[in-house]
Image (cartoon, rainbow, N blue to C red; front, side, top):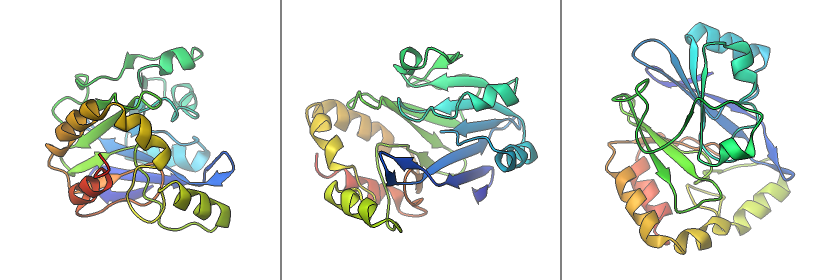
Length: 224
């Protein structure tokens, strides 16, 4: 675990998708009652389990979009009090998992007033829910934006450059056409996100934007 702020940590792990080395990131927030909000869980190996145990009880495990669900099943097996929250459509994709709630625009009581959320419905392939941790002023994204600035794998660098997802905070080109087709909805959702008072931004793939995240986000979405 790497601590970013008071009661905010990330766990960064190697990850390959379709043969490309894009890495992945789990974000962990300690809530006011001491329980942990675990966003986009990584594989629960012994080291990760031990790190989480030191931080607090894992009670809320969030699969924020239709793709970040691979390791969710590890958590209820090891943390019996954990509730599982999934993106719209993930419950039909992963019928083997029990979801305690499906994510929407209204935070559940467990983190209401501490973490805000909004569903980006303009890109149904993801149905990603974006979160905002008020205390640390951090917006938490998953796949909707990439911020990959380096890679040791040449093919990964080439493909991400071609797709516009390398060298800064960006929306991959393969995402842009379907989002443009629902431009009004996308802009309305982005306006809601930009109302949040965030300065830091995390993504699942690439670097954390530590400062000036709102300006970087506006630039990334300028294609709309």
